[in-house]
Length: 143
Image (cartoon, rainbow, N blue to C red; front, side):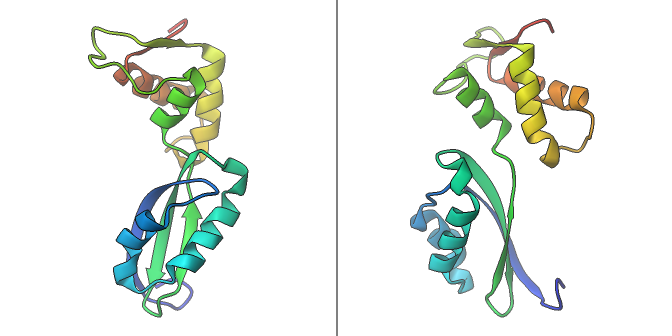
């Protein structure tokens, strides 16, 4: 129960900030009876400053078909690819590298991801981001 309402469904969607695709919203939330047009308008307004980025959102649907949106930070792999201008990571990450991430870039990504991570320590967040980068075949400078 949230705000006296019973939760009927909770869905996490990864949509484009400021320009969510109705097909993605409709596929996941149409069967729940949610007003998908209103959801798109609310999401686009909330993410207008992040236009073009992938911004995950947790949609909580209540029994009365109302909904609540909780925005999250973009996926770590997306932020790494965006920072380095990559289309994707390495085909064989253990033996192949596609780019190198500087400590400053690593810190910027970690600070942006901090609200969604299970730590308040920037150094720990940097280690988590570095792990994702290594799994993509991205080398980290000075690590």
